[in-house]
Image 1 (cartoon, rainbow, N blue to C red):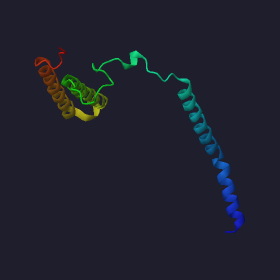
Image 2 (cartoon, rainbow, N blue to C red):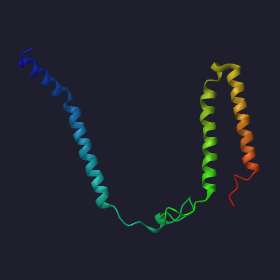
Image 3 (tube, rainbow, N blue to C red):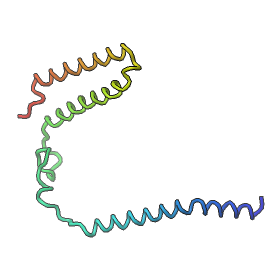
Length: 130
């Protein structure tokens, strides 16, 4: 391999990937300009609406060691539980023809157990907010 073949390889490399490097350079420059413009042109002072309590029910900029109501955790756990049910229902319904009777009855058992859990959570008042 002589020096001329290496030069041809380098020239082909730069020719083929010049557009990639140019796109990357333009993208970085554009991202920097947009980020800098949004920093310098935006208002830096927070308005009272942003600082007010929203869904969590407590002031957002207080001491982090304040007591936190356990009901928020219970609602989050119940949401995750019933959201996972929906995540299991979709693939089951799509593949219902392929899984046969065992898959159908297994999922029916899963749905019944989740329904019993939902009724239990409802009866003990976990879904009430007082």
